[in-house]
Image (tube, rainbow, N blue to C red):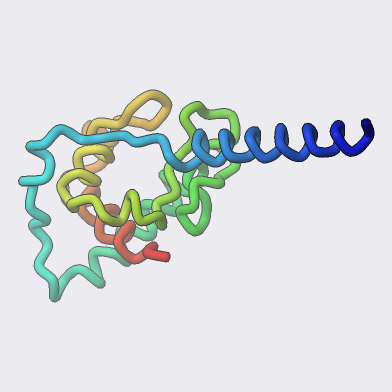
Length: 135
């Protein structure tokens, strides 16, 4: 009987942790198809400098929710639902630059709509910084 309780506990815990993993990192937020066509206007030779500017913006505007390393574990995101995305994940990194730019611009739920706050260049700088966060 004790063995059955332990087995049920382990099974329940496994299911719960699997669900939490899904809700924390697998929320699929899709930008409209047209966002894929938005081209990054910053040339490849300027992207390193752009990413440096984006890192500064990220630190002051995004880190509170997305965490210091962009893993979605910032203190400000703890109570949010859905949780902030892990920007290092393949799910995020496989998106087109335009999709990430669109999401930064338009926000969703508790994520701020940065379009009216940051300039277009600043938003592209953040996109270029997000690209440096690959796992």
